[in-house]
Length: 356
Image (cartoon, rainbow, N blue to C red; front, side, top):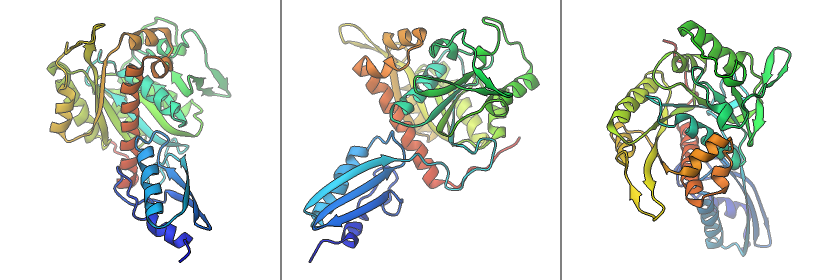
């Protein structure tokens, strides 16, 4: 019996996405199937270019087709980042996924994590934006190497900088350098809204990462009132005093109907030049907290001197192209986040706006 396209599709229905737990045909991931004299060409569209299990999917597709009788198999993997199943009709319809990065307290490396999440997703081929929403202490001008630069303006709208493969906006490039921003709640609310949506011309994006101020104050509330989020990431260090505040951040996002996509443990441990590992802050606390709260754990970032140096120098891409251990640590977290976004969008209807 000749090998047919229908036989190929039947075989592909037995290939289960290892994270979404449904077959790739039902998930509409199979975009093209051609069969010619037993030779099969298949195009599989992944739900994110940062898919951590793409090679597993490739292997499972080939094995299923060969087991069904295909003489030769050619597989092409493409990617199309997906947003909610029901498109949003809000302030930023051109943005598929808005992800907040928050922390219960300052000093845990939240902004460093936000920058590297954005650059890491773009490194995989996604269209990514980064907004420095930490309006009281913007650090993106230094971390992105744009300190002292002024963004271009078209009409009344700011054009984000395009640096390190991402589109970035920070209030730090719109005010006098080193000038303190002493704003009460309504002023902070207005400034954030204008920078986030009203006065910024964002392009079409797969992901928009928003770096929030630490704590549970006005700006996170404003963001969750402006539009529904795909979800939030909470950054913590391992010691208990930081974890206590991380719990408050998780509960805040949950109360605001913003799904928590995961917790990241920063400064998890230190690796000495001789290779020994030192748990300076008590390694593993954030992972234990994630388990207790029932939210995903995205991974840990050890204390790498290169990460500090690259952040100070405004060279975030070097984190993915220099130290293999640093790159591996960041890549794992980026891929885990992308997987959680895909899972969230598959499971949920379009999130509802929650106004308190």
